[in-house]
Image 1 (tube, rainbow, N blue to C red):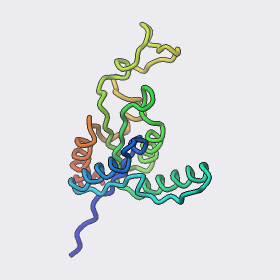
Image 2: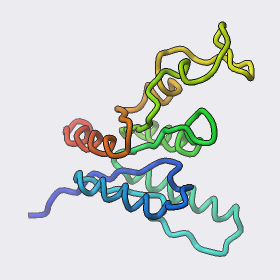
Image 3: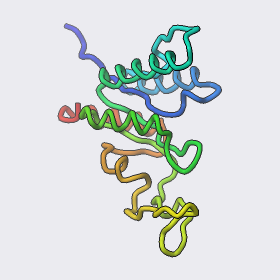
Image 4: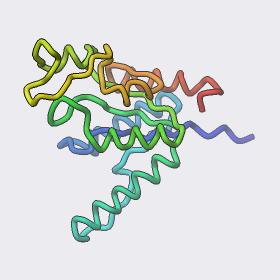
Length: 171
């Protein structure tokens, strides 16, 4: 008798830009493994060395999209990156997963509403003159209204996602 395949989880986030990206990926994959999940980290893909930068970028993009198509769920690091919002590549990956009907579990430390996180004037406009949305959500509504759940840390996120996926209707 063969054992059932473990749910595969794409590990989305700007973690690939860390100085210890490979080690951190191994850590995230080990967390998944400890909870009965198979973590898929972008650096698992093989990319031919020595190609022009645009060709390398296209290969990485294609490989990551393939991973998202092949996974059962996405765990997304939505902590702020290079500003007040999550990484744009991660936001793309979340959107793609949602479009494919795959559950997304987000993790991020900042739990206050966007209005509480971003400086704004009495009318709700930021320093650049843009309205700061006031839906009492910790992230943009397109992210917050489409994830299956959220946690404050990767560790808590993996555990919660494993529990979520263990319910048959959620896979």
